[in-house]
Amino acid sequence: MATNRDTPLLGLLFSETGVTADIERSQRHGALLAVKQLNAEGGVEGHPITVLARDPGGDPDRYRLYAEEFIRNCGVQLLVGCYMSHTRKAVMPVVERSDTLLCFPTPYEGFEYSPNIIYGGPAPNQNSAPLAAYLIRNYGERVVFIGSDYIYPRESNHVMRHLYRQHGGKVLEEIYIPLYPTDDDLAHAVERIVRARADVVFSTVVGTGTAELYRAIAHRYGDAARPPIASLTTSEAEVAKMGCTVAEGHVVVAPYFSSIDTPASRAFVRDCLEFFPADVSITAWAEAAYCQTLMLGRAMQAARSWRVQDVQAHIYQQALDAPQGRIWVEPQNNHSHLHSRIAEIDGKGVFQVKWQSPQPIRPDPYVVVHNLDDWSASMQRSAGP
Ligand code: ACM
View (spheres, rainbow, N blue to C red):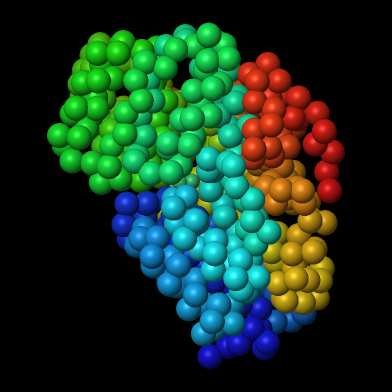
């Protein structure tokens, strides 16, 4: 077996099965595309990066066990993975005890810092804050929250409630459904949404439940006007599952959409289309996994080493011209300076960008600046590494 002494090792923790398999397969292929490109450049000092991968099946205990196995038995020091926040929380003590590094390419609830995690997805000031402003301005002040029942939706709703209240908005209902909702769970939730007569639904439902919820809402409203569902996570992968008619008119905030028409985005889409299996979607979270893996590789190449301490020191000096635009890691909190875009899904399932931040937004995971009027102030200081 290859050891970390002979060759740079990268452990991938993305589920191939389970509730979030569609999006995590997209992330896994994003990471693998970056490894392929790094190895085509000669890897690190002529050593190709070797990938070890396991399928944790969406189960936090298995994420923890596989992280332990990678680190203890295989000598892995660099990991990319996790989607649901309780899976990241399961891996966090493992990387902290072993002083290794997890790159987490997923939006999350914020209010966390680990010296052993690099956060590559948006924190609430980079997605919830601009989304709340956009929804209130464009749709109205009455909102219903619906989420899967675990930490990310509950904490994200806590922040969103504050953001809505600051502008006189009203949260009419806060509904939670299981990660694997039954038809009854969905039917009850949709009835509560209909009765609330909200202007918009803010959904933090993840995984397979996403397409099921959007479909249940489309079915219940039929030909009547239905409120748009706004989300921080719904991606091209979930839209592929629900179909374009069901997805039409809904709203998503993310750093990247595969529809972005820039040279860097077009090149990324072209590379993904060549490399991804036909049933794997090109998503913001594949882009995040691609970017974080590429940054790890660039840091290894710059350090001429794959020891975790050398790599981490060099990560803070990297700025990446990513498919979304230039991004970098903030050394003060290990989160990433990211772009923010709000899109509405059209009748062909294309994410049409309606708003974008003029530059990357500085990550503020403790939402120090969380007034709707002030959130853009966090963009002012984003000057690069
Ligand atoms: C998530 O649980 N961070 C999507």
